[in-house]
Length: 243
Image 1 (cartoon, rainbow, N blue to C red):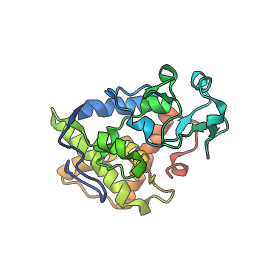
Image 2 (image 1 turned 60 degrees about the vertical axis):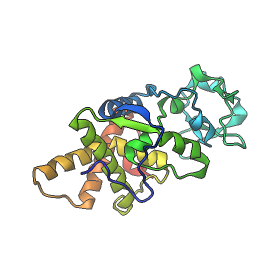
Image 3 (image 1 turned 60 degrees about the horizontal axis):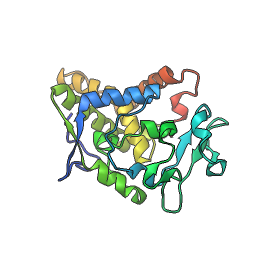
């Protein structure tokens, strides 16, 4: 498993104006913990508002009472496929979040959990190029992040995340219930199931047998199921929600 594995449409996401993204393994653990526990991601955004101006639909859960109280009801609509009470907030004709005022979030202290956990470093982590035209600013920002590798573990884990993204992209037929096509969802899924590919790398180094693609896919689904069980043990199994 190599750190430079790439998918079709996946690029070398470092550029001439690199920004420090931190040690990879440290970032990976914090990111997974933030998504698992609904804690905020620590992203050094500075003045960047790319994610606020890139035509994202923002999911807001019914328990986010303080957030919902600060968003006009006319900006919200039911989230398709989600239980009652889950809503989405859209964007204006320019693709900007309606809560963005004078290039600042007007509800920052009460912003949605979706915004709190968003981190565009997931794209260089997974080696995924942001291809959606309306998200060009995010693509530009993502291309500037540069991870550090103080240990071999950092390199191995980054290689595993990219190998996960590559497999998910190239072996979609192995997942009967589908794999996310959206670049953000694909990158997040690769980060969630990377340990499957880390183990594959370890087994390959030990000259163990190579599993089939279907066996790897089953391991991916099981890894995702276990992760979901830690966060939402009563919800629908992941098999029904991978799409």
